[in-house]
Image 1 (cartoon, rainbow, N blue to C red):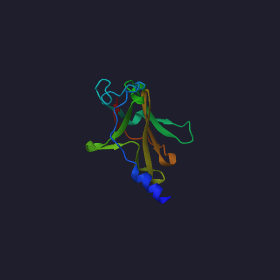
Image 2: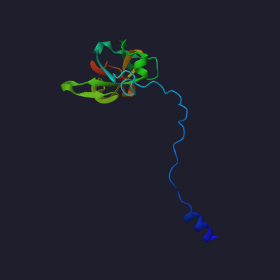
Image 3: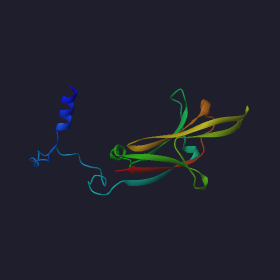
Image 4: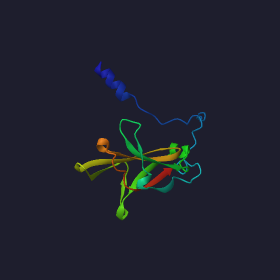
Length: 160
């Protein structure tokens, strides 16, 4: 049995390739590509930058949930559904000395009231929808005795 297997393996050899056969049918059409990547119009990624400022008195307290928080909402007409569907937002809190903190960000705060010093953390976050963006501040232990400080935000939008 072994000599027969060896004869089959060693005895078979491959000759030259024959002529190429006829070309097959064309496949289905592909989807439209993204601008600048797959050749749609060559413009590529677009970037927009916006700044939003919230004054201390502008923060509104929201108490309709078990966990109160502060909110401020802006009209953002440039933020269309198509941008949301084909892009991304990056939001920063603008700090002093040209520093930025990417949201969400948590900061430690100290306040003083009748009971003495109070230490709490503050979560700063955002949400967006077509045509609007909202900024939120939630304090640990849901401390709401004082409105958050004025804050400036930078929003960078990248989309195709």
